[in-house]
Length: 328
Image (cartoon, rainbow, N blue to C red; front, side, top):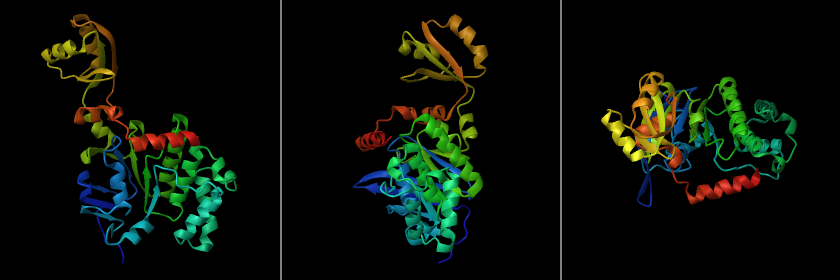
């Protein structure tokens, strides 16, 4: 069947997924434009991976609809699979094969025509800077190199949408930065739609639009800049000798403060002008105070009342992290 026209390359309407009576995704709706770098930002267990798995036909929705590249993910699953590339959270390469052999196997599975196969493999290996290692066995690769090869594999069959599910999870900050260099390069050179899930705030800043998801629901969806405008003003972080009393005194000043392990956080206009007078007149002993512009973490904290880093990691995720650490 030929794809039908639609407003976006992905159209999701009231998508729900239940597991044994537990609702993991609670009626999410959104669209993704062709060529967009779209982000799902949220803590572990928020429903990010479950949503991706439904869009990639790995899970059947309990209810609702999703259309990708004009194909219904339930009724036309084969066509959807031909339209997507997917980089999983967990490694999925054959470590016994070389980099090129992994790509050759994938090309055959996706019916990349033989006359184009070698040229395309060379192209994607060059894109992720692994051409010189094409004949090396994957078990000799670092974690970052494996991630880059997985991205190359996801691009091999010219997908309309590339899904990156926590693409830098378990990687050190330097390797994470290198992976993002490649992601931005492929966005420019391949001109495809990229759908990213992450719980790293800095990664979400790279997206043209971000959907913040928590407890299976999309809380807000907009560009990073517009989301940060919802916080407003400057963010003051405060540590005091008595945070409970400080919250009460701030409330008396008409300031609503939120608390986490990092201290108290509140917003003010013209933070640089506010701080000197505040330090002089505040009745609670101040141990530390800082000023910064709003971030997506502030947005998440304001909308949910909690920080993403406070979320408890599941036992399954702890095991995955342990396994990844052993491979690095």
